[in-house]
Length: 297
Image (cartoon, rainbow, N blue to C red):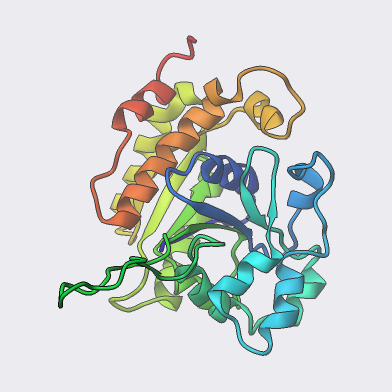
């Protein structure tokens, strides 16, 4: 139903960590797709549901081999894997060289993502009893839609990824509130606005990666720069700079991951993005306050 693209510019941190955390707490059925043209690393970061390593040959590359004859949304599930905890993922390419021959893939893939539904659902489900005495026809229940959170890594000007970005419901750019990162952010927003220009271009949101104790200052500063530069983007919130939470997400620490600052901020971002995609009011404002305030547990 919704394709949420997560990306960054040169030097911006943690898109893959943010993508995993946000997808893990997404409030609706979701697929995490690793679409980084530089090559992904989920297969090396996170274990599969059986505790072993993910299969690097199953994912974007195997999907591309079958997609040359046409790509249907339901084909995607044949190439996904499941992480410990139950998150479905489409593992990415293993290196940038593989991406050079797949520039044709991103547009069809974006359209297939937009049509993705829950796997194994028996198509259109109809009442088993036929209409009686001219009664109303049996109702049709469509398969539940699946949202896609796409980790697109670092974007570059004139990238073939533009064809996928055009299919997005929202493009989310991650940045830090430093002069260098914000300068790159400004250039990337302007570039995207030019490449995707038009009334149907997806909205661009910005998430600021910061120490939760500095959320207010960081968000205000980045928001001021975006406003003063009249950039076609809005600040969506903050994502916690939480190294311990990131290590717990990789399974290297014990403790309550769901209580970490990383997951608390991810839940806020996920709730807001899901609400925007559904056309409803954003949720979790209270959660943002909790994540950006005191670190007491």
